[in-house]
Image (cartoon, rainbow, N blue to C red; front, top):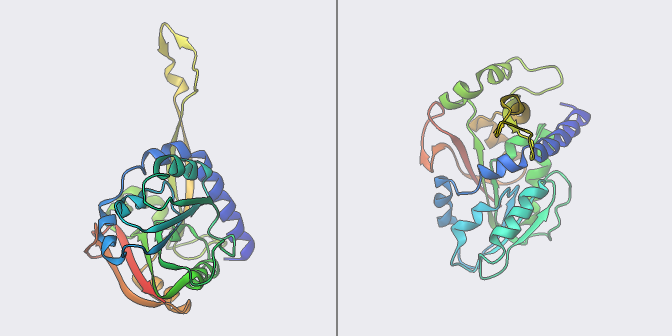
Amino acid sequence: MNGETALAIIKKTTEDYKKISDEFIATRIKPWPLFNYFKKYVKDADKVLDAGCGTGRLIEIFKGTNVEYSGFDTSESSIVFSQKTYNSFLTIPPVFVVKDMVDFPWPVENESFDIIFMIAVFHHIPSAGLRQEVLREAQRVLKPGGKLIMTNWDLRSIWAVKKFWPEILRTFFPRSNLDRGDFFTPWKLKKIPLNPPLVKGEIKGDLKREERIFRFYHSFSLREIKKEIRQSGLTILENYYTVSGERSNFLFSRNILTIAQK
């Protein structure tokens, strides 16, 4: 994929999340069970960076600790939600910033974080070149011995193929301007007027419409993630298919869990 196409997709992704922000936030309020698996990697008083933090819900696993948490995301609505919800959640007030992952450099100093999380976000970055820049930026801001904890959807599993099968089939025969494994998944956005006209006290049925927003994803294999991590200079510690932290195979898993170290 050329640089112009990659930047166009980045812009589209930002715009897409603006359109679906309210509905997306509503689906990302509670932590996933997988998050509990991360606790063993984070020590009290660690400095944690949540890159692509979304609603900031990862912060809930740090409750009662002295973790110094910082999060950034390209969605202004998600950051506003995070600030309102979690501003007083930790002993040390968390920091939330509106920032795109591919807007380099990240606004943090070299070797300043013990842990970096990238939860269900790396697969939104188009082109191996841009993903490599993101990983090198993560390496820059990690302390020596610091860890990158990353999850990506397993988009080759049975659940994913059932849900997105027309789009996933296209990953094997990509369009000329996309890379193998690139595709767009539909989000059905319900559009209901804030003050709809009433007909005999009821909302007109035809005012409830659905618009499909197609978000960019890259479908990873374990081998591809391993290759990209190694190219960045980080060392792979764990890299496997998982359901809620438990190991699985690619057919029945939901995520690929990757843990790398500087």
